[in-house]
Amino acid sequence: MADQSPTPIPAGSTPSIPATDAVVNPKLLIPKKDGQLAEVARLVAEVWGKEAWFILRWKTQADFATLSAEFGAAIGDKRGAAAARTPQSQRLQELDDQFDEGLRILKKYINEDSGYSKERTDARLPGFGLLASKNGGFALTRDRDQRLVALRDMLLPSVAAAPFAGREFGTSFWQKRFTEYETLLGKADGLAGKVSKSVSQKDTAKLELRKVLQAVVYALKANFPDTFEAELRAWGFRKESY
Image (cartoon, rainbow, N blue to C red):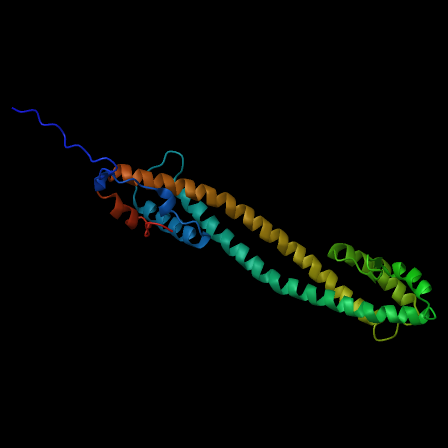
């Protein structure tokens, strides 16, 4: 019988790969966006709970379901805290703008009380918590924590002791806004911490979720070499890429 040599593959061409040998790339099957990842993880945990035969030696279905739920909760906490933070930040900016406008009038009061002497006025302004700027003017610091201290420890007491304390931009104007500013700044700091904590929890859970989902993809390919694509869809991997 004549020896049959294999048909040579033309140079530059790529040999075809049987469907059963197709390469599975978990990175394309596993979403990068948090919302989509949470949904795929939820579906996988649900199916895994019904497939008692499926086992990963290093991660149980119950642990994965808990991890999936925690990831979804962390996303919700982060979104909720960020949404709550926005009005706080907007109001703080409004108060900062009002402080700047109030300072414009306050400096006129001080100048008037100083006999319209620039030298005497400039000498008194630091006592109201104002800092000299490079352009020769005076203003409150832009750092909100330091601004709060300057208002409380210097500006408010100095205005209260001045002869113009009862005027429109005197004690009442500054005290009212200072009280709200102090409250909002405390809330904003608390929300910032909540956002930071949620981000940390989310990122940790996200790495672990992706690790488990990659293992699930490979395990399904190994257990269902001829029908793994259908199995992947049944387990919640609904798209070929994200």
